[in-house]
Length: 248
Image (cartoon, rainbow, N blue to C red; front, side, top):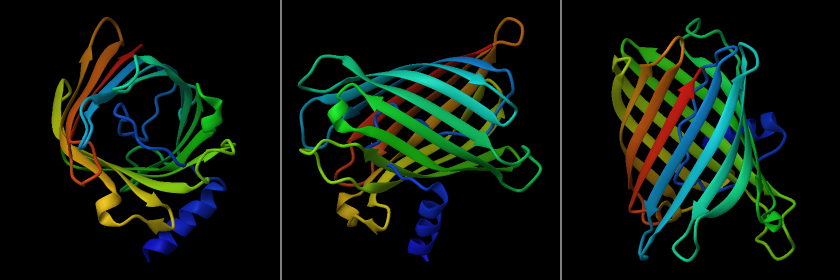
């Protein structure tokens, strides 16, 4: 059954993707607001397992709600590893498409498509594609995303091209607009059609807080802060990630 579901997702996207989730990765939601402009900052830092030092990543993005069903955003990404200074890492182009009217059905459905062009072109272009799912139970909101990732045009000295499977999960309690709390989880399971053994899968889970603070006019600042603990042997021991958005 698991393989049949993944086969369907693979066929539906016509291409696939493969990339390790960076510390600044965040849970995507299917909602789209027409005409909304957004300035975004994301940052994450992870303590590496069985190693000294940390890996950190940050992005600066500009997004726009092109239609009531399509939101697009361009990011500049930076990264710091234990052996290197902070450096420019990649340009990323994200798109999400809302396929259902918000709240009309038990589950809101969207599609996420991402293209990343790394600084080191020998690494190849990176694609990520998959469905965005959201449902509500009173004040509780649940999100689940399933992604396929792949690198293309990889140099001859690179590892063979593979398509990997990734998930994101989020549950939050909407106490008030300015403050919500919940849990987030991220994971990479290996090849889409042949998952790694459990000790080689990457799972991270932990508490998170959220909020949206109105400013002048219709503008607002949104925040999303999480502390993730490694739930598998190869996962980072801990990750702190922060997402700030200025919507106007």
